[in-house]
Amino acid sequence: MSVQAALRPDLAIIAANVAAGARVLDVGCGDGSLMAALRDTKGVDARGLEIDAGNVAAAVSRGLSVIQGDADSDLAGYPDSSFDYAILSQTLQTTRRPDLVLEHLLRIGRRAFVSFPNFAHWRVRTSLLWGGRMPVTRLLPEQWYDTPNIHHVTIDDFRAFVKERGIAVEGAWFLSGDKSTTSAGANFFAEHAVFLLKN
Image 1 (cartoon, helix red, strand yellow):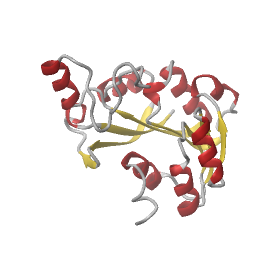
Image 2: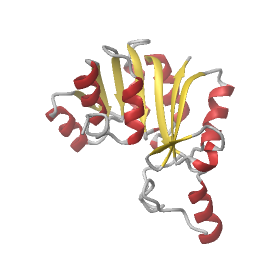
Image 3: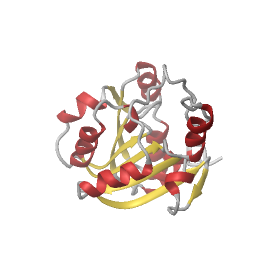
């Protein structure tokens, strides 16, 4: 199995679209899977910021440069344009101020990858409509009381957000399960989205 094939689908999309030899900051890098893949396959100089101490230890044990920190409070210390890419995968919806985190990403990186679960997916809508309860799915496995997701963003919300701020979308990918789906109807049919942004 290739390194990219072993990645979560949204991370595989990001890995495929990061230029070889780039400087990357992975915010909310988890155990460093994406960083290791980028280092090993593309010679990327990858740095990571991760809030969970266990994940930091796992990433460091892979020989990665990862520090413990919080996207909401620790991005302000990074200089402007210090990375080619700033990456925020499956973390946007867990931050207290996603608008400010995105501002920092686009300030720190020349480009930013952002991936997030789509809370307007038809299964989520159906669960609320027919069951009257917050959904628990394969991709959103936590109960309402223990979920880290505090901002329930949809693809259309995110599209409106970047348009209002004049942020250019250089690429967008949509996933239904682990497979790509089209942009048309993505707000209804896609479970996850990946955007490549540039100020």
